Image: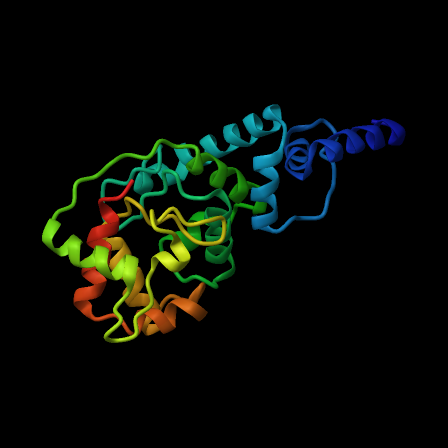
Length: 233
């Protein structure tokens, strides 16, 4: 390929967005070289990319999901085991950042580390886009009475011990944001485990704020909030 033609192709991909450029780099005849983008930026770019570029990213994500992710998380992010988180509907940027943290070691997991070692930031962005688009399902709460206690703590905190309301950051419906996880419908046992890990600093990323909150929660409050969140959609 001549340099003028390659330059025109690069300009075309760049105008379409960095996600499109990465797709071109993967599958185009020129294998265009470009500096890597951070996972969160790429996730945002994937959402803003043209439809054809998003389709290419989703095709790549499906390839990865069917090759790896489905074993624990299911093809649609609806894991059947509380050991593994439900990813359906989770924010693309948050998914991409967690995957990048697993690869870098900022978030420790003997299970996830080998799964992401051969993936790049564009793969993480594509996977985030994939799981965000999967349908969210409603789930019954195992212990409704416990969940009612959790509802109080989640929405209002515990004014008697100084625990802040979870809804202040995660939203009243626990929908989260690109930087904060969607908690609605998550397995209760998984959420409880994350709270315990934040409390003990066993979880090494996203810890600055969560450590201070989790250390104030009692075991009952952790279980109750987790139960409440599991029933939201």
